[in-house]
Length: 440
Image 1: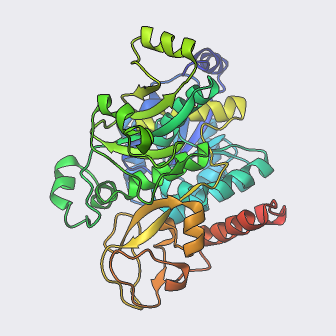
Image 2: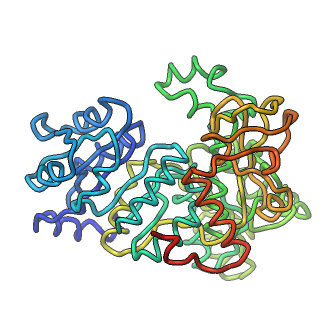
Image 3: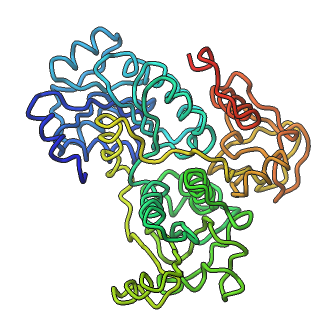
């Protein structure tokens, strides 16, 4: 909370904290609610979740007294209760979005369609949005960022999630004038692109995880999504489809992530990638040819150069999200946004798919994600992974391990996610801003 602690303390003393609604009371949402409960200057006034009881339980787990929690059915009742100092446990985000006592909405459902809809509705209501939903962000985050700017509010990815943590390292290195050779994350699950909720069910049960979430980690989809966000935030690119993903420890990174001509694995510099063996950290490999800087880095114990490693050994996921809440509410600044279009995570068939078969999305049985350069995805007409669910149906047979194209599927055109994605596509092609009507 560097730079915000004193300001938040002042808000607490004045009795006017930043007021937050959290949508999604799964693991990430619950962790955030509990973390904020111990803070000054930020207050979670509402939690919404479609699963009965989860919103109430999130408040209880954070130590909120039972008598302070209500489940109103009307906006007026909800607003009055928050005004009196109570908190809301809701079965739908609609009430939280409509009450005036919410400054920041944190989207933590993990569902691409829900994430897109809730973010759009929050922006329309002039509320800042912190996106813990990487799946939606990777698919339509560039469009939501544009719409938020038009509305005069902040749309941002969340501090503590790996793209944001790595982006901070990138900004630090790039701002100091180092050449960023590679930036990425560690992966702590062996890659198995055929993983499904069934194959990881026992492990998910032991770890107390949702099997679909674990499957999305093991099949690599989550890593591909996160590195897509990082690429589009920094302007870096994947060196090849799927990235390299070598095995190695910290001492191996500056050897691996350098050009092939110098003994490394890269065909170019300025890339995103991942490594198996340094999880849960994030890293940036930099280079300097400045003799004095190189001597100083060596003196400081950073190695002989010209390649050096910057590494953060942890990321605290939703427990760090309050940093983004404070930055958005107090300074009107995002933590990480996708200003470029350098990468796309596309859908690849996990199994042979038949015409008429419905796709089941991230962490499911039908598809997994593979990152590739945005230009290559565009040339293929590849289907973004985030669109491979929510009513998307295969219209012709597709062999296993094939990248699905837009011609292979029929999408639900009534979907908010699809509508935003099509608007985003038109922006990519024309470079023009959407009309004011499109943002309303």
